[in-house]
Length: 354
Image (cartoon, rainbow, N blue to C red; front, top):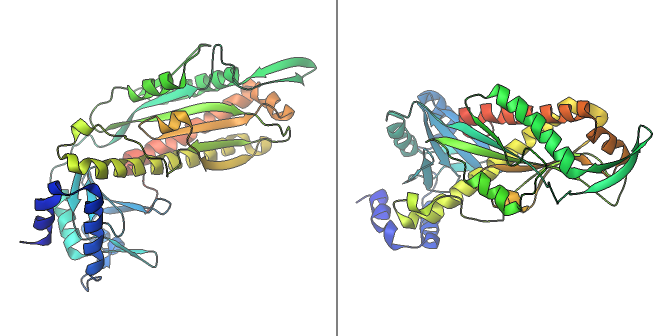
């Protein structure tokens, strides 16, 4: 009986902790084989594509509509984002990925199976303008063009959200483009995430969640735009346990999906920041992408990003945030970032480069 058969035979009888221990114990007992090859070279020979995300240390091997998700040092790989398989663990050595010939043979078996012709796609994008109704968010009164103006976060969020909605709706008639609110109404944080998690999708479709906010600070000089994603250290359930046949595999599959959502969220945040920067230029400054456990991103079971588009406590930036032409630039920047991610996702399911 081979190693693969032994593990599969006993997999149902051991805990998640034991599964991980067994995988890694066996991996470190087996030295890097003389038959191991550079993954990029092996993929090129077989006609497959390799995607690697250095931030999350996860990779993807893709061919004929099939995807194999892997992590160096881990013998468990994910086939087509739904099936866990056991194979020789890839190895990352001096920045180069190596795999055994058996790893590639297992991959080729999957690649030969006829794949779903539809492939993976973004089926819906949900825009969430923060605050609303009785909750104005941050507020500040400034003299703008000689008049006293009270800038309310809820209004700026909604105006930007509507502009973004119009661009996405025109560009993607085949996708669901939605808003949690399109008028000045109050929604609780739980109601917003419930809307997100209730979006109806077809097979092989995903939904993106983008929350729009405006910043405030006691430091009146603070300015700029930034994007937030969920802290990698925060763990939650993101897949339906009833959809997993082998309940012992549920924790492993859930962890893999959590990591995938974080990787994709980071990528969305980067694309959006670059998109806004290209539109607003030196009118505002980029403050970068950051991790935090905001309610809406930690409770949305999908790639999710919260964007702070400026500081209304900064007089100069507040004047920009109530200027429709400037807000159009911001919305266009967010749109360009989301559009870039959609193209990337539908090609590679969120991994960041060859």
